[in-house]
Image 1 (spheres, protein in one colour):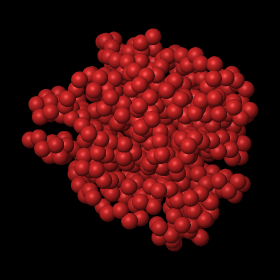
Image 2 (spheres, protein in one colour):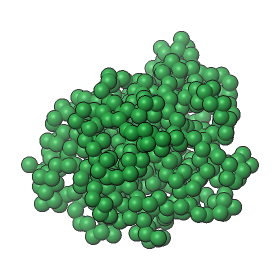
Image 3 (tube, protein in one colour):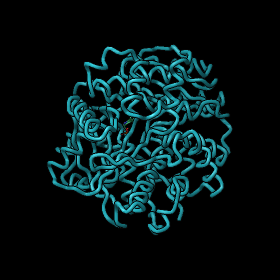
Image 4 (cartoon, protein in one colour):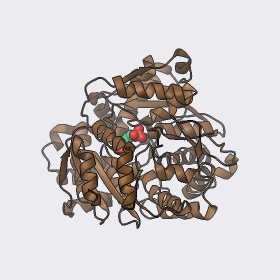
Length: 496
Ligand SMILES: *Cc1c(COP(=O)(O)O)cnc(C)c1O
């Protein structure tokens, strides 16, 4: 069965998977969604025998039906290789009665690597399939992790350029250093004087600028997106939920068909939406627990049915979740609204007034989701407690999920087997993590001393990604105002 894609704001016309991947965002400003979510329909007895790459082929093959077997297997083989420091790619760690699904074993030690190590291959394959000869320009807004992971994926990939925008004061020192030291002739990093939402909105505006697109077309360029609005990011994320479930069945921790809850530290709503897609494919997922930090727009939305971004944007120790406009929520809203028009009206209201409220009928369709949030203190306490109980150290984002999971259990008494998406290595946020464990002992250490201290207490080797930035030279230094974003893109591309 062919799976086609349509826009959440369109007229129902469809494109192939490779066309959707190439375009990133639909021409009408909507996001591409599969017309139908394919079924997993593989016996568990087969799934449990598969390694990560094989599960990846089964899942992605069902979504990307216009890729040949050879094309897709080649993309997978290029993505999930020694760039990951564990053969399992996404291992599970049991701690305090829950399973941490470690999604941070790739090149940039955050979960964005799970999708961004394959997206460049999906994109260049899509370009070839559609006889696109333009150079593909990847434009990306990042709250810290996407930017580095995208550049690592696209660096020196022929036929591509990548421009990353990040909020100047909105990322961690390690995240910033990782980006500013990025090698590759085709990589560009630009800091903006604004927050992540400004960066994301700016990128969307550039995408929707038809005049600019024509100008670029004349010069042999076309834009695409590496943000999680690209369906080529979302689908690879479905894989690890299927793989985790099969691993738990193989280890006798779940019976085939038994429900597994997932807890996801959420920002742009991409990771948890992938879990929702896995559930819609037929994977026995129970509750989808959406964990927010103090920027708790999603928590409020799940409680009240009102999405309202009109509030202060708070900077937290989980910066990759400091987001007030969760782009991927649009895919869920579209699904529960039941029509492009209704979805479009909600999204117009969001861009005009910063808010919208869904109907009671729509709210009833959100029963798969549970939303809650953790304050800075609650997240820090979760890091400390898990370390004291088990010796396992989690990062600040995963900690938000762990703290929310405790609230969920207390509130619902649901003790089903649960997987927490562990989205970054603690090394990426060493200062905040050590502060949570023992402020007095660790706060006075320099950044690099902290890395050594973390290595000592966590008993986990320092990842290559961290070793690299100890010595790497800074190669990028551009800073612009929010309203200069389109100008800098033209300048970088040499189009005036
Ligand atoms: C991006 C990111 C998140 C949020 O994921 P979304 O898919 O945007 O919801 C959480 N934790 C970390 C470490 C991230 O990099």
